[in-house]
Image (cartoon, rainbow, N blue to C red; front, side, top):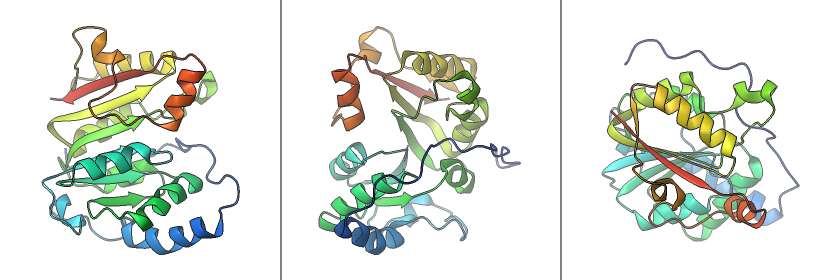
Length: 232
């Protein structure tokens, strides 16, 4: 699938770019750490995506919209032989992660701070072992549904960059978005939902560290779902 890339949406899939003003230490970490870790889309992608990382890695996974970075930081620390690319356009979320990285660096981690579709269209074919989309913005109003990240065009993007049998993992506490994702993936011929019982989507993923968004959902008595699909 190395032909034409999908057309880009006219509206971004994310909301605001900035929150409250950063503390001086956070801004310093952002200024010093992000430029060294940011994936440069102005350059040609490497033939082998593993070459992006300063440490030797066996495979590469992508997390889209990592929020405060709790899951990405945990996974990259627990899996040093896997390279991770984390995408987060929200300035404050990126600042939180790079502040942690300035103290505890991850040679198997790269970052991107803009629209994930730009990165997806830059990546080489069949270069990812997995994609995580965890607690994305549900865009609950019908007029905003076109801004939900799970869509036919973005699933096609996923298929191009995912290796056969690569995982797409989706977690959300919004039941309408969970159903939306199930319908979209089950209608797509390249994705196979990995569930044989309710426990397969009710239980968090192995090694799941939890996130602040998930904690808020549970406090507000919303039930998270954890979906896994394999790319055929």
